[in-house]
Image (cartoon, rainbow, N blue to C red; front, side, top):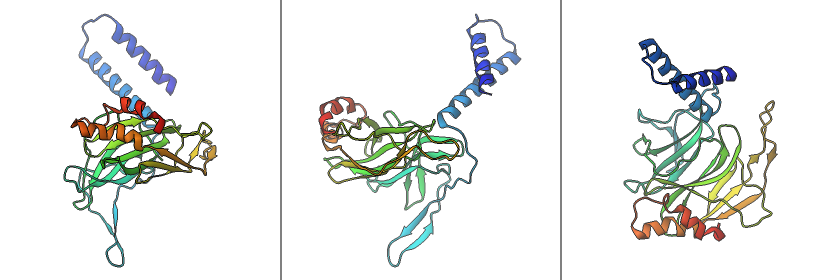
Amino acid sequence: EEEEEEDEEKEQEEQEAQPDAPLSLADKLARTAAARRRRERREKKARGPAIKLGWFGDVHVLELDGPGRWRSLAQSELRPAGRAAHGACWLGGGEDGAGALFVFGGRTATGRTNDAWLLDVAAGRWREPVLAGRRPCARSFHGVAPLASPGGRPLAAVFGGLDSASTALGDLHLLDASSLAWAEVPAHLPSPRAPPLARSSAGVAATSAGTLLIFGGSSGPIDEASGAPASFHAELLALPLGPLLAATVDAVDEEGAEAGPAESAAAGCAAAAAGC
């Protein structure tokens, strides 16, 4: 099937590379349909294979006042597709300063995704914000944790996971809740003898000092027969991000810029690399 698709794409490219000539309506429709199929194949490849399962998209709230009670949250018509293995955390700030539930990525019926959503829990209203900066690639089984810059700017950290080819990732991205801008930051451990960072299914949390804690997870090629990864981890890793955040996020805030960390991350990361 893949060879047939490659042959079709090569034939179509050769046809489009030929000198312009009058095309019949049938030829135009055929080229449009072929272009659509190529686009759909590229999107499918970026998401990974589709899996037919019962995907849930419901939200439940645990009310802690009194004895504690679960309730199902009525959601807006606009909402994320049902999914699994996504990352979520409470993200402070926002338009009204009340904060929202932040959901990123995961796996849907059509494959892995990199969409980002914010849920107003009180109103049950979802929105898919327009985010600046370079969005992390599609992934599942990643870690998401809330943290704050030394200056108090609310952030969400997205770490690791599996990409569309089921390869373990070791990258780190920050979303600034105030400017709604992404920034990729270097994820380096202080010790040269530290284990590799790339992993999925790790526990991720942040301290008040801006250190990202990563525990466990799995990595290595996945066995096709069992679906199990090659290695499991039991170490606790610490990424001190405080100096980096002060040199990027807070520096932008103090200068009164509106672009968030995305444009200044490269310079700030270089200056604070020793603290990463």
